[in-house]
Image (cartoon, rainbow, N blue to C red):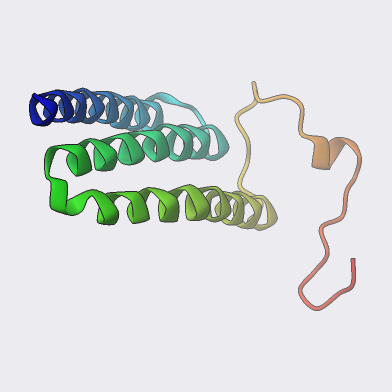
Length: 119
């Protein structure tokens, strides 16, 4: 009885994860500029992979520790990597979509420190 309940709960988690992974892929295809695509890709795919891995961990009992470790690793690294990509693209001069407002760095004339300079 408990095995069937955990199995069906795992299947629900896998379907939720696949749905969010699909939304992330759709957002990457449909959104206009790099920063919007980066947000769609990071937020929805993080939730999608975490839900899918937890669902697989519930379905296949031997993988629950691996699935939990994967979920924790992704929750820690995806925001950091997306921030690094966004900052590098802004410094490289990637143009934003004209409808993207406001650009706080441009409005306040923030100067990003060059490599080796103090903040």
